Image (tube, rainbow, N blue to C red; front, top):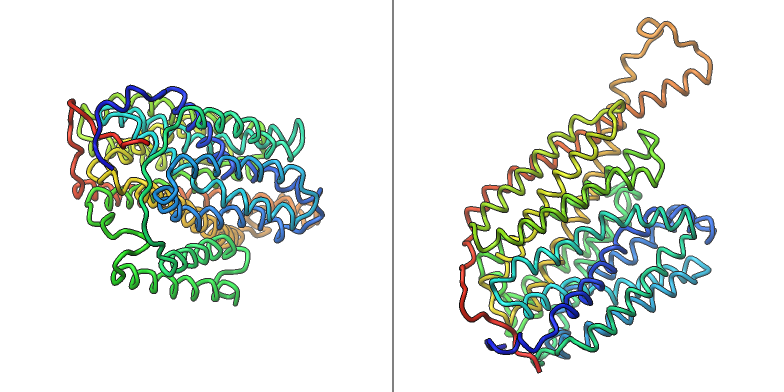
Length: 502
């Protein structure tokens, strides 16, 4: 790709941006919107809980495997056809999920959803970079960040509302009109990028795909199968280690590897990937913890849970609006540091959660954390690609989003495992202090003992939740010094680099 300063004037930026964001939000929503519908789906499809887990696992694994392929496909066939085919595939697969009548059908259609939708988020980021001059990259990434972060936040609430008022099938049907509008908008307005013909490194892709797939299966199935006490998990771990080892050795020795080593020669890109991995951990792990805590331990219904967690999204959106104006005027590293500091402060406040609190603390911590993550997300995206050659942008956005997804998978798996084990440990510790002498008013009747056990379990679970929040706070604080390894993006106001379109 080469520079061109006249091309952007001919682009219909508003239509391209609206269409790209529609596709981004559609895909981001599906990472969480189906979770709350699983119990209803389980009854309709007559499946066990273990079997229903594959509805989520198939989508996650397919997405993770296909994201690295996005860069090569966009270079080989052009960004526009890949984007349009992805939208069509995702929309059709969503409709098929809605009409599924058996477990094998919906698992297969969710697999197709993941394969088709994997390219939408990284390509949308690359498109917004290319259609905007450099001085507008901060605002473009702010808008993109709204779609990427808001989707998982509002997904559970929207999924619960659709399931309660209509049917779980509408969790998938809602994608159809959005997908049609996104396709029409991009087919009319989006220019194509020049194609770069090159050999496909099949061995490198296979190694990376097997490694990522095995890692996702290990993380997703580990808690259910008691981790390395299960032969299944041991097999996943062995496949992952061997595949990643072969991929790394092959990448370092092959003349034209699947993933260009030049990506990691850029200090900014390398450092920001560490941070985006962390944001994936904190953002999605918190989203995985708070709704179950409110519903199971505090008795909140699904709709109310969505309402009290929605302000978190408002905080993110507000920060995106603010940070889009700050990037380019202030050192982006300071903005990221401030955002991570706010995130750590919100996590510290969340360690004060208790069973008797009202929803005020939930709302305020959610707003603060949403604002902090939004404040970090945009400058990180800007710094990551500020010094990366535009020819590596397709590969770079794919890897950037892959790291975020892996971070979220690892974060969710770790906090859920710690939650289960710490709950059991704290239950045993608290129960040691319950005797007929400490609580003489409790009778030995079955009902009283069950009520007492339930109270101890809820209290133990709340302590375990607080321990998880504390762990994420320490991780967030520990990564802030890495900002010193970044270089701030250059502040330029003249002619800007824009990808040449055909």
